[in-house]
Amino acid sequence: MEVIGILDFGSQYTQVIARRVRECGVYTEIFHHKVKARVLRERGVRGIILSGGPASVYARNAPKMDPAVLGIGVPVLGICYGLQLIGGLMGGEVARSDHREYGKGSIRFRGRRSDLLSGVTAGSQIWNSHGDRLERLPKGFRVAAISENSPYAAVEDADRRIYGLQFHPEVSHTAEGKKILANFAHKICGCRSEWTMRSFIQHTCEAIRAQVGPGRVILGLSGGVDSSVAAALLHEAIGDQLRCIFVDNGLLRKNEARLVEEQFGKHMRIHLKCVDASRGFLRLLRGVTDPERKRKIIGNEFIRVFERARRSVGKAKFLAQGTLYPDVIESVSIGGNPAALIKSHHNVGGLPDDMEFELVEPLRQLFKDEVRRVGEELGLPREIVWRQPFPGPGLAVRCLGEITPEKLEILRNADWVVIDEMKRSGWYHKVWQSFAVLLPVRSVGVMGDERSYDYTIAVRVVESQDGMTADWVKLPYELLGQISSRIINEVKGVNRVTFDITSKPPGTIEWE
Image (cartoon, rainbow, N blue to C red; front, side):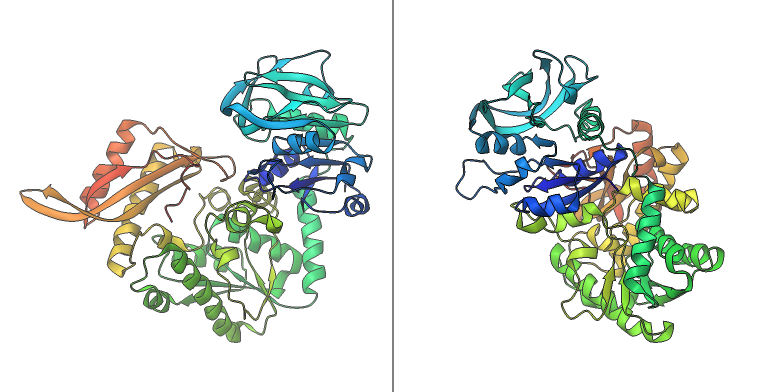
C-alpha cells in the first residue's frame, strides 16, 4: 500500500496531519524526526511531511532531521516548524517574528498558482500558530502565497518538489486545508485512494492472526465505542480465541453492567465473563485525590483483576486494548520529541512493569471517527458505534477529589440526567461529548423552606472532530435550564449546576 511518511517534531497536531491525509484515501505512518533517509527509502514512502513543533529552529536543542531526507527523490511538505527547518537546512533565514501570528488569517496568491494550492480560493481562511517565520527564501524557492503577517505563507521549489506552509492545513480552522493536503498526496505525490476502513480491517485482521497465532486473547470490554469495536474486530480476526472480560470497577455509568452483558453476551454471542471488582477498586482509591495517582491505581488494579480472572477463561498470553491515537499523543512524547506530557491515559500510561501479558492494540493507529467507521463496517448497532466517548478510568476522572460511594452515586445519577436530556432534545448525536462532573465544592442553597449545603455539578458539552481540539457547545438556554432543574430536583445531594465554557486548548475535555 502506498504510504506518506510524517516526521514528528513534537507537534500536538502530528496525528491530525495523519488523519487528514488518510481522509484523502492515502495511508500515513509517523516516524521519529531523526529517522534516517535510508529507512524512509526502504519503506517506500511516496512523500514526506515535516510536522510543526514547539521549538525554534535556531535554538541550541531544537530537533533536527537527517538532511539527506530532502534528497531521497520524493516530494516534501514542511508545515510551520517543518517549513522553517527546510529554510534553515537549505540556506534560507529564520527569525523571531515581530508579531506572533496566532489564530485566523487569510492567504493571497503570488505568481502562477502552485499545484499545492490548486483549487484553493483566494482569501481563504487559514490558521496560524507561530512566533518564528521564514525571513529569506533558500535559492530556487519562490513565494506561492502570503498572509497578513507572513511574506512566505506558502513557498515551493517545484523542480525539486519541496513545498512549505507557514500555516496549519491540518486543523479544521483552515477552511480548505484538506484540499491542500489532498493536492500534496494526489497531484504532487501521485498516490491513489487506497486507504479505506475495509482495507484497514483486512490488513489488521491479518496482523492480529500473525501476532497471536493459535493463542488466546483477553479483552477488557467496557461497552464504550473503542473496546466494543476492538472486540468486534478481534472476533472477526480470531473468532473463539477471543475471551472478553467485563470488569465492574464501581466507576461505570448507570446501568452499564446490564447493558454490556445483554449486548455482547446474549446478542453478539461473544465469550464474556462479568467480574464485580468494585469493592477492591474503591478500597484502593479511598482517600486518593491526585488525578495521576487515580489513573495509576486503576491501571494496576485493572491488570491484577485480569490476572485473577484469566483462570476461569483459560490461559491467555495476550491482552487486547482499545488504545487510540489521541490516547498516545496525550500520554507520551512520541520518540522523545519535545511535546509536553499532558496526562497519562488509562490504556497507555497505567500498566505495571511486571505485566504478564503481551499487548494487542488493533485500533492504536486510528482516530475516533475512523473507529466508528470500522464499527459500521463490522455491522455493530448504531447505539454502540455512536456512543459518546467514555474515559478508561470511568467516573474517577469526573469525580474530582476523593472518591466515595456516595459521591459516585450522585455523579452517576446526574450524568444520567444529562445524557437523557441530550437524547430527548436531539442534541446527543450532534456533539462529541456531554457529561456531568462532580466538583469537591459544597455551597449554601435553599431547598423548599430549608437551608441546604450540597455539592455542585458542572455540565460539560463539547464539539470536536477527533478529540485533539474541542470547543464548548452553545446549547439552547431552555435545554440548559431543563438539565439544571432535573439534576437539582432528582439528584439528592446537589443544589447547584454550572456549565463549563472552556475550549481545548487551553483546557482538556475531561477535568482530570
